[in-house]
Image (cartoon, rainbow, N blue to C red; front, side, top):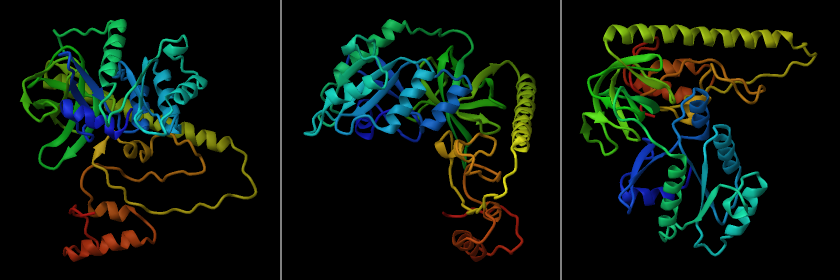
Length: 363
């Protein structure tokens, strides 16, 4: 949870790819820290709800000139609900309008017990632009990890979680995962959420092939049959038959839970007394293009999830990841200039009006 300039510092130390969401920073002391850049607070909440305790320490970055913003409070709430220790980095301390003391008071007023005020939350003033205070930030993170006595076993089957998943045209489903314990070995059968597969390739964050992944190592896995969700656990099994059986059981349970949520929602709606003036509902068909499972987009437009505003229901339209197809345009019902424009472009490709073949649309 930081900003672009601080992430650029991480890039200069090792490698940073915002699309991947996980990267390793080599420190001057010789140790390394794995950073998990959660793709939006909605994805972080979904990961926590599914029991994926991926994060050990939350690095909360606050701008010294802007102070505590609404997204800062949201990040604090997520970390406190997950019971994860927080280390605060007050960035942009080199700016003339910077006021680190004001930021401290704002954080304390929101219930964050800072070390300067008798609490246990460390606060470090940094400037990513001038690269000042970064050594102190490294010491604070390593000290927090030492106090928590963070250790992980290396031997035995791997325990890992999905950070992000995307669909590649040539390689199929690609999963960015981080190993919590054990060793993940190429060629093993795995069950990821309700999907399964045999690991065909493991790549580190530099894109280099590797035979195994050890704890705190973010990797990209290739070889799954389907696209899992962000936060799903990765279980290593001994055979293809076991992987198929476990995957099928999880899919049945997932479908049963989804139907139960729909039934419960309809029962609650039927218990509400009808009013004389029914609100008018206006639908605006929109085609949303996204190629990554785990972004805020993926969580928002999932019809099986709960929405905070009951006055803004979203229709349950099909969702898929990857390149746009003609069927996506067909599902955007109703008059829309965007829909008409996309449909004309499809017809220009020589498709008949009632065609159902899936051809790519360049959006």
